[in-house]
Image (cartoon, helix red, strand yellow):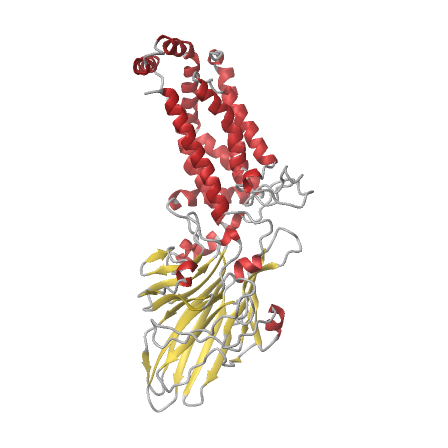
Length: 579
């Protein structure tokens, strides 16, 4: 087989993959210059107000009726109007609207919209008559003729503030023998518990069903908040015994509705945030993911209808998660009985490998207090674990350097007989005990590590807005310094392929120096490939998270140091390459 033809084919395939990935990342994972977290988390600008919360006629078939002439008001106006119960916890602030008993005002006090010091906290929920409506609510459906509380119901509250130590009870009666009560409590993180009670003081039994839902107006507009092959954004949950990642906003826009016979939890996931409704553990419910009105999306679970006898009451428990997808918090809730809640983070197929990488990286960060330093220490640990493999790689490459004169002689002798040339080269490798593929093994092992780190940086909120040093203030984002716009002096953002910054340049230089220490290939085509590859990778890696570039740069520097050490230890390996 012709070596040169194979190498040209490999070059073309590699270029197609690398440049193809860059195209895919631009199309599906572009980097906006200034993401708007209000749009990202709470909805889209300029859309109509969402439909009122569904009042299901049956547990599996909710319906909603949108107002004929919706009025969109500013967020501040909506929050100032009407009676509200304040929510105050170490992680959340907001309020519950006594009209409809909606949880429609939630901000995450530990997280800021941008890296600026005066940046406001991230808003998750917003009232239904605002342009970024997003809220959770609980309610009842009952047999015909029995009035149940609805979106316009005004509830009476037992106190003015909901905190981890002060629960709140909302109550309302229909005047015909049935009273309704919601006992709200909240923990120190992101879980709200709603105990729903219907009491029947009438003369006849009443058939009723309770439900919980999340309504969301519009879809996220930040390009990073779009579903891709590496990350699911949109409706999700643990439904019918499995984690659901195959329902997207585009399916709901087409009028598709998804019904499930069992639910552990369901809701909407963003890159870093989650809103979900959760029934009691092992409770029998049905669930649905629908779009009850244009540009309005809903996730709901409902219980079967049950008879409430005269003089009796029925209490059910629903829970609402509204907060950040912190790995430890999700895992703690999962351990407490919420099935597979940690899968709200779309780890993908390599979860078994990504989670250990995350846990080690997070532990290192807790020890040193700087996430960039933690990435560098992680690289050192990985290199130490792979040292025996890298040593074998270096020995193999050094042996290749020593036998290059023999290889060159064989290529000259059999230059007109490629098949015989290959046979003689294989015999030479065998006689000299050289494995020509040994140099590829560390690279192959690095691929899953690199991908795992990529997913960790992309998905986990623990890495969000973490600084390193100097101009690198967010390692989960690309290098903000670009040569083409004179480091921000010119008011434009270069396209991702040309978004070359200092980190990418350092990556290219260290990769070039590393290749210089390797044995020079005898084939001219291979020589050209190794000369071009560092600078090609420099442009390809420029749009990636700064943390990834820092990992690769550190890895290159460690490789250079190891090669220099081996050359000093075995000076005979410094045989000059054949020209």
